[in-house]
Length: 459
Ligand SMILES: Cc1ncc(COP(=O)(O)O)c(C=O)c1O
Image 1 (tube, rainbow, N blue to C red):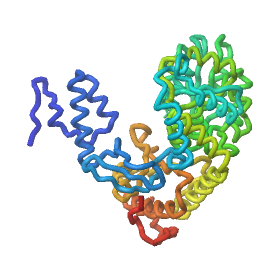
Image 2 (image 1 turned 120 degrees about the vertical axis):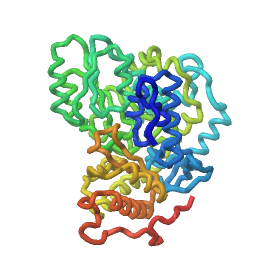
Image 3 (image 1 turned 30 degrees about the vertical axis):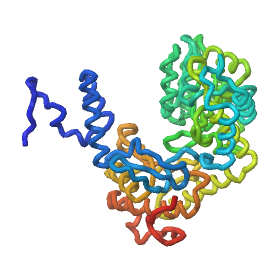
Image 4 (image 1 turned 135 degrees about the horizontal axis):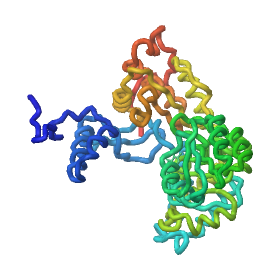
C-alpha cells in the first residue's frame, strides 16, 4: 500500500516506517515539529517499540537489585528472575542486612526526610557525620554532601571556574560534567580520551592566558571500565598550575586500598584538588559528595546552586552510606571478592576466545565486530534471562558498539559460568562467521554448578 502524503508532499508520521529509527534520528525528525506533534510522534514510536519487545529501557525492577533480580517487561505484569550483570551496585550493598537495618533505624529516629536545603534546615547530624567520614576516606580536609552526582558536578563546575578560566575534560566525560561546563562562565576544551600528551598540549596552548585551568577526569570510565592514568595526569596539572578534579563515581568502593578510590590507587591523593564520589553506585542508594579543602568546601556550601537550591538527601539514605562505609571497614574481604570475580570473569572470557587485559574495575566492556546486530543480541540475552547493558550507536560510532558487563561482589563463580555459557551462545548466533567463538572447534566453557545452560535462576 502506498503511503498517503500531505499537501506539501511529506508523509504523515503515522504512515511512515519509523520502526528502524534510533533515539537520535527520532529527535532529528521531531525537531521541526510543534511540541504536541513532536511528543505524539515520539510517544507512538516508543510505545510501539516497547510492545514489540524492541526496547529494554524503563523495565520495572520488582525485587532488591542483586545477583538475581526480578525484572518485568512492557507487555505483561509478570516479573522474571534474571541474572543481573547490569547494575552499578558493585559491592552488592543494596541487599546487605546491616545497611538495610541502619536505614530503617534512621527513619525511626529522624523521619523520612528534612524538607529543606542543607543551608537552611536540611543538614542533619548524619549529614555532618557523613561529611567527616567521606573526607577521611578520601584523605581530604572536608567534604560536602550533594543530592546526586549529577548535581555535584553541575554545582561544582558552574561555581568554581569564572569567565577568565578554562575547564578541560576528557572526551569521554559524563554528561553531568559536560552540563556543568556548559553552565559555567568559563571557556571549555576537551582532550582525547586518556591521552596525556594531548592534555599537555592543550594546557601548553593556554599557558599565556590570565585565567586558571581546571582539568576534569573520571577515576574509572563508565564506558570501558578503564582508569584515568592519574599518576601521569597529576604531575602535568601540577606543572601547569591547573586544578585537578576526579569524578570517582565508578571507582569509590572498587579501586584503591580497601576501595578508597582511584586517587589513592595511584598514590596521588594530595595532588587531586576535588574528588567527587557518588552514592548511587557502590553504596547502592543516591547522593554524592565532593571531598576537597576546607576553604573550597565552605565556599561551595554557600554558593553551589545545586547544593543551596535543592533539598537534602533523606537521613535514611545518609544512614545507608554511613553503614556502607562501616561495611567497607569491617568486611575488607568484600572488595577483595569483587576483585577476584573481576579476574575470574576475565579468565573465563579469555578461555572462550576474547582478548582482553586484566580488568582494573568492576566494568568489563566487550566491543562487537562490525556487522553484529548488538540490539538483537541484547534482546536475545534478555530472553535468556541475562540482564546486560550495551552501548550502542548513536551514543558511540557503529564500530565502537559494546556490551558492558558490570560485576557485583555478591555474584558467584557459578553465576559467571552461567553468564559465559549464555553469552557465548548468543554471541555465536549474531557475530559474523569469522568472529564466532566456536570457529576453531568446541568452546572450552566452564560448566555451571548444575550443568544447565540458561536454566532459570532462583530469586
Ligand atoms: C561518571 C559519572 N559521574 C556522575 C554520575 C551521576 O551520578 P548520579 O547518578 O549520582 O547523579 C554518573 C552516573 O551515571 C557517572 O557515571
